[in-house]
Length: 367
Image 1 (cartoon, helix red, strand yellow):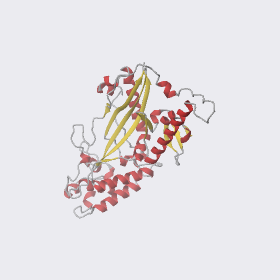
Image 2 (tube, helix red, strand yellow):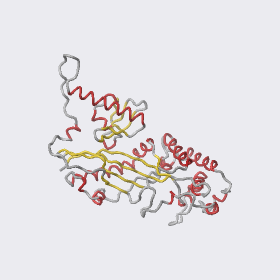
Image 3 (spheres, one colour):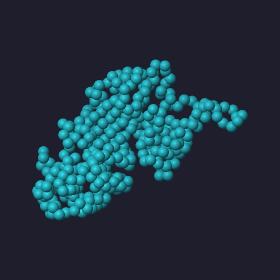
Image 4 (tube, one colour):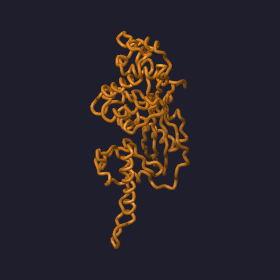
């Protein structure tokens, strides 16, 4: 890892930016573009981050490209000697000049899809945690809870008010299950839930937390290596690769990441909250969205989309239909209130999809 000032970077170094300092003037460079928050798509730099950071990086990138062109053209003060051209960058050398180019590639190309689709089971039916307004007060009060109790029955659900349950949900989220920037993300998610609008939720801080998680890095490493292996085994022609061949290139079945560590669930060190925000990724998808080849060299970009359901189903607060096991979450009034808000027929607050999109550059040499 290397720290450099943003304004001192050469154009190729922008593809190695991992993160920025607090003031945004310096950046941490990764050892590999695979860990970068920046990628190129059709000559344009794409940056994963908040609006201010993305704009600063793009502006610095355009300045760096202009400065590089001026230097190569010998630009300087009138009458000065032409500047000596710098040797080709490592990235430029990897994309060797060659009059033989790849045939037209039809994009995007689906290279990975988990068995479940967003908000649906593998058989196409709606996921149980996306249903809402489907239970009466009597049905909810009869749900067995942890320690052989009936905790839902302690409340008069016919008279309780929604703001009381949202207070319980927010208190639980901020005192037990989140900290740092992810706490604000989870509060934003609860606010969207309270608006009962359904749809999708995205947030740059959530994307950064998911991208940095070790389980995401394991997933992306296997995915990237498998994609590169398939491309190289098929002479650099990704359209000639079947979906089953893409799947085989990842070895054993590749599952989307889960976020279950102690720091994910609770306060952790700095930024806990991934368990409440996402927990298990419900659906994963990856596409090759950019690709070009010159001679034996190729480069491209992968788009990975993770989707989860921000909602609860019966096994979250009551007995699992398959095992009979009851999770301890039902002992928390915040979880019970969340379930009531979603499933009680007179409330029927709509769950929604949480979406995280990550981009990863790929490059390599054909055998």
